[in-house]
Length: 472
Image (cartoon, rainbow, N blue to C red; front, top):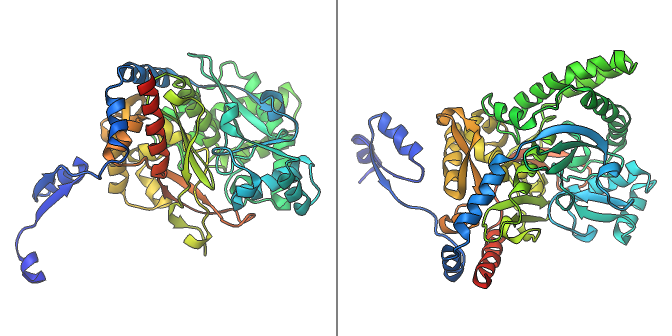
């Protein structure tokens, strides 16, 4: 048969995967045959069987999901990290699972160097490197301290943190303040302009936000803002335009009021408002601890196979599960595939980095791409890809989050509660959309794209959960 013969008659289509493809073709009159095909699963069949037969699992997952969905998030304060985290003086927090300086990637090294210079623990880049290599500066994961940080996630004692609480279950979570885009510390940049900007955030932005938040008659309901974002074209990870504007709306009356109540200069307050209004990712650092509150609420339920953390440090990708507590399961971080800024290309991108995958762990971000089809202009792909991705993520999760409704799907709740067993059975991995930091320390952001965890994380978690099931 020639190509001419193939195109001479009406097409007959064989479709495999989510229904959105075959439904769209049928609407155009095409003859479509659906095939129930899916990628091969993974994991030891004996481990899968042990979990399938674990009598604790249905009730444990139900409990974990109920806690996750019930969690709320309100903004209660803004405070320096040294006042709330309770870590030793020369400690830097970072994104992802634990890592030593010798294994740190370029952007994480750049951010750690910048933080040492910012804190005055070193007077030069070379001295900072020596002090980090010698152990003079201690490194710990953000997640070990109820904290999350985007990209490198580096948080030092003088940096100000958003302080959020779950009014339902009493949890607390923290995140540093978003610097904006470009050559910033979280992307591994550490030049003089970066340090100057961090000093302004320490001396002006943090104190102004603290005074404004403390003066508000009612705390900001951050979970409600996140829910509204999904109905306004955001997905909560790489697109935060609506959320940032809503945060500005909530905070601006209190900020303006400081001119009268505290005597702060109007020019200083205008500078803060201008920064918030011009920073489209301002809300991300409020959304992340909101997701952290929810997934932390689902922790430590024996027998539960729900994922509570997905995070990466630029070298390794790590996950945690409800049934295994604080134990990390890790594999090599993958390099995102997507769109690049300026003259940057794939060879410039560092492997995946950041705590911001807590958004996907909660069920937004890459899981809610259907709510934000415009995101494909930033991370690559097409609008049908965005819709299909969300449809696929329902196959990996234990519930739908009614608070995070997706308009284009008939206000269906976002897929929530990643299930290790479902990931292993389907062979599908969670979808994350993310920024890309430059491989070389000091470069900054080079693009944005899509990435998935390495399969090894879920294989290890599956085996550990199965051991627990057999021992119970």
